[in-house]
Image (cartoon, rainbow, N blue to C red; front, side, top):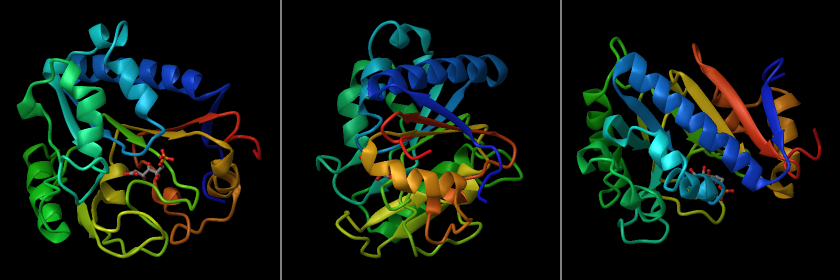
Amino acid sequence: MADLNPDVRIFEDLDALSQAAADAFAVASTRSAGERGRFLVALSGGSTPIPLYRLLGAPPYVGQINWGTTQVFWGDERCVPVEDLENSYRQVHDILLGHVTVPPKNVHRVPSELEPEDAAAEYQRTLKEFASPPLDWPRFDLVLLGMGSDGHTASLFPGSEVAPTAPALAVTGNYEDRPARRVTLSPAVFNSARQVIFLVSGEGKAGVLKRVLYGKSEPEVLPAQRIRPLDGSLIWMVDRAAASQL
Ligand code: 6PG
């Protein structure tokens, strides 16, 4: 069993899920800024978080978040130019970051124009600038993650190699129809976060969600099972369609 009693919150639809995620984002940003003077967040690519990003860039949320003390990272990135529609940084910049007052120096995109190995090495240097010793990377205050219908999360794909301690990994294997050249944060980084929220929507995720949450532990097959914060909370925000087999 992956986790005896996962914190699963079921919402009527993606809009309600996104609203709840926006509330959680605002609460985490206020708490982190109050306790530590900054809010370190790692964002997800994919389509599920798009409504959330739109909410965060508009009232009321846009005024509830201290963008000046927010440090924005990505949980993974596709190694394509920033102008490419597949680029996760570009997606978030167009929908959210270009519309809020986060200082450009606080936006830490993966240098996706580099080869995956070089981009991963460069990103590890960026992570180290925000390290929480003895870690070589930051304890993120909030990590947002999606999950594919094959159980991948970020760019941790079924069968992909995972270096147990490296903070950022180059991903070059071909995994079905996805852009293959990527950088991903490693499970070690995700699992040192204070809070991880999975956002899962749609009937197509229902079967794998049940397996990940309540099936046998097989993280090599279902990488989302690798996400188990050591000293942080893990919340699954799912819509009714994705929860239809729970
Ligand atoms: C990405 C994400 C990836 C995504 C899942 C779910 O860069 O695409 O890191 O892990 O979260 O594939 O994607 P959807 O939200 O589009 O279903």
